[in-house]
Image 1 (cartoon, rainbow, N blue to C red):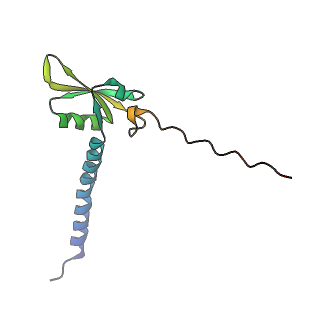
Image 2 (tube, rainbow, N blue to C red; image 1 turned 30 degrees about the vertical axis):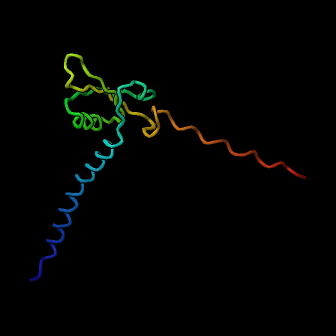
Image 3 (cartoon, one colour; image 1 turned 180 degrees about the horizontal axis):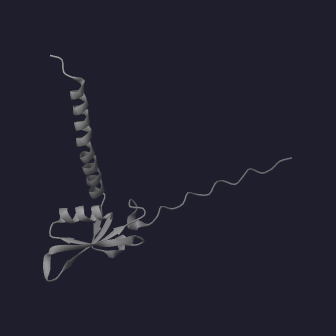
Length: 117
């Protein structure tokens, strides 16, 4: 039995359509894995505050932080409701460096050789 070539095109389109959400999920998982969380405000020094979020599930809270565009969050708990976690969301310029501090500049180049005549 010979299959019409259109079925291959439909299959290829279906694969491409399914790959898009998978890539988006991978990007979200990567961002969630690199998210910095802490209770000390110093972890956000030098970062830009972009919002607030709260939830009673840490997994859901992490997802909210990433979807807001944050890469760092300072967590706190209300005394009247310890089951809810509050997060101040920050975006840091250099997410890989501690405290959001920028990487040091490269060393200066060596001096030029002396001129001989």
